[in-house]
Length: 166
Ligand SMILES: Cc1cc2nc3c(=O)[nH]c(=O)nc-3n(C[C@H](O)[C@H](O)[C@H](O)COP(=O)(O)O)c2cc1C
Image (cartoon, rainbow, N blue to C red; front, side, top):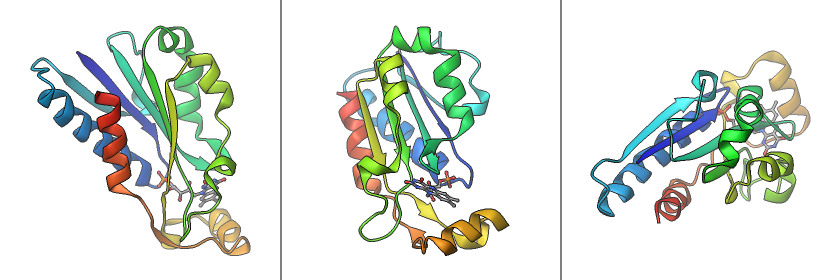
């Protein structure tokens, strides 16, 4: 069985979530007796086809309520192939304690959910490092008083990967 985990990330936090999902999936699928399991983790920019995979996990960091373009492009370009396989979606964005924006206001992926027939969409908290932001991004987070820090919930991320494996 071959599984693709792919994500779009601007500052690296979401790429690390994709790596963690890949690692937890690999472990869980091997435990379930899948000796021939291959889990590839690739940036969305590097996905030219999903035809080789039996299942796909696709995600993105959220900026201004949307997925980044490389993740949207994977969903759009390969919509037929995705609709023909089991697909799971995730987004990473909300920051702070409690994370803001609230999950249901963080991102709208209803179009991608519908087109791909994805089985689930999860929103995970993200990471904001003001030092790594460009001028325009910094101005936005200062104006909106967005909290800085790493709010990624590794237990929730690994639990979700195990659910997918099951
Ligand atoms: C300019 C800017 C806009 C953002 N807009 C949103 C948003 O609309 N919704 C959200 O949930 N998170 C938003 N975030 C938070 C990011 O999604 C979060 O920091 C994420 O973990 C970044 O992932 P990356 O390091 O993979 O790029 C925004 C962050 C910045 C800097």
